Length: 365
Image (cartoon, rainbow, N blue to C red; front, side):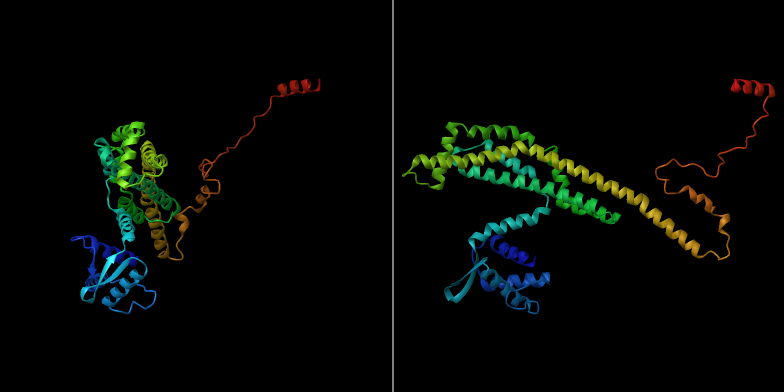
């Protein structure tokens, strides 16, 4: 985790404020040393040396050298024999992605992606079609990735709630009000589902995207792609155009499929969100209404029993025979008062002799 933080600190040093492509090594070491000293890292490691016992400047220098050896940084000697440091070109997009992922706890307005795509398509310029389509595809992938990640996160919260019955009310409440709000972004998602629903833009987005597949429009897209990418078509023009058409069809089809599926994905997220909120609330109510009261009564009773004198007659207070009302069938059989008598004395009447003689004659006949 510390390596990531130090890399992002270096990345920010190069890209923020003046956005400097090259920084003197001594200056970068000084800035990184101040950062290490301020954060007081306890898990810094180096492949070759024990780093924990060194001062912050030595630690910063070792980490910069380590990042250089692992391909994150470049070093060059400039005039005056001063060493300068720059970011490797291919690691910049990696660090940008890592930074975006790490900022996932911040509330991102998902509707911004949809509106940007909608706006780009409504004012679509075929003279810049390649750049616009690539940007539309990028925004669509980020939007769908964020929504699918949101769906997975809610599932993890539900699983954690159901598989950890020993969670205390405080733990459930903290998770619901703090972690869930930050990681699942309920308020932002709620806006996406209601007032900023993509359905407001999807039909127009799909209409324009499908029009790109028409022969005349596809020709214009291919021409701009050849010009933008500076592709040579001298040898086999037909094969080049077919290959470009496939690429453009893949991009357009992906965006179309995404916006046809987005409503279903939002409904799945909404369903899981509702399930988690109801489950967490129900578990919290149950624990608050039952757990504390039962434990309190038991503890209070045990304390009082401890203070009772040994010769105290408990039969006058607790009728122990009444405990028989709770037996191994009491959970599924209707309870009844066992103290109430369920039988009465019965003395049969004296028989009538005439009736007895008649019945005897009939029986023997």
